[in-house]
Each structure stands twice: as C-alpha cells, then as structure tokens.
Length: 165
Image 1 (cartoon, rainbow, N blue to C red):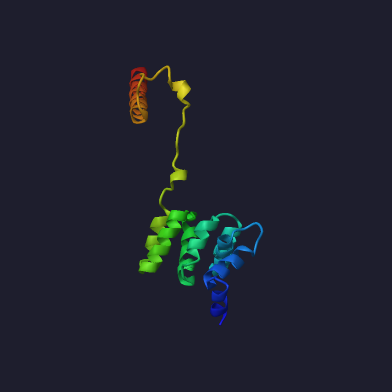
Image 2 (image 1 turned 45 degrees about the horizontal axis):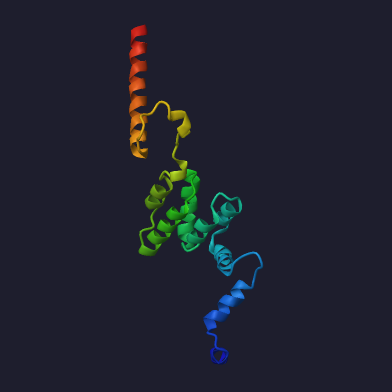
C-alpha cells in the first residue's frame, strides 16, 4: 500500500528511504550513517579496537561482515601478531569468508604482510643530489645510480677496514 501511495507522488520506495537516511544527521552522509550502524555487528572486542582507533573505520565496516566466530579468530590473530588489517586486507578477509577460505593460517598470513605505509623509506631532497648526479637521468635511472653509488661506497669502506687491520 505504501509503495502504491508513493507511486502517485512520482517517487519509488528506494528514493524515499535514501532521502530519510540522508536526513538523519546534519554532519554525516546517509551512507556513513549506514556504516556506523554496520559497526554494531562487530564483536565488542573489535569494536573497542575501533574506538581506540587501532582499527580504522572503513576496514572495521568490512570486518563487520565476518561471522562472530571469524571475528573471534581474527581478534586472536590481531593480538598474536600485534597488527590490524588495512582496508585492502579487510576486504580480502571478507572475500575469504564469503568463499569459505577463512582459516587461522590465512588470517595470520594476511596480518603479517608488510603494508606499503610500513616500509622503511629514505628521502633525499633533489636539490641536495643535483650537483652529484649526472644530468638527464629519469627517476628509475636516478634510483639505480644512487644504489650503485652506495654499493660502491660500502665496498670502499670494507677495503679501508681491511687495510687498517
């Protein structure tokens, strides 16, 4: 009956639901409101990690689709590895769950992956290198040149130490 009444207004039921969803909060989008509601499917221990900001909001939403048993297994691995999943890792864990491939060793392997933002990097401003690098090198050739130069210098230091002995 509601659907019929809405047809007379020229609106579908889905359009009305989205409008009311968007009107719930002045500061959050309707989609974000849905995501916050989705977090209620997390076990309390994982929800606490979200509150402590150890697990980010969007990965937590992905994890909320795991069964309670899988969430408990994930929690144990988080505590064991002292690592929390990134968004892409959480999405893969959700896919493993959907495909029936959610196992302790799978979760362990995913949590032990090195995340791009955890890789150690060295940054040197280009103006400091400009005088010592050959002109016209692209980014990859510059990187190769620096690595070869460092390797050459390391070998030089080893030879120096051997001479001193």
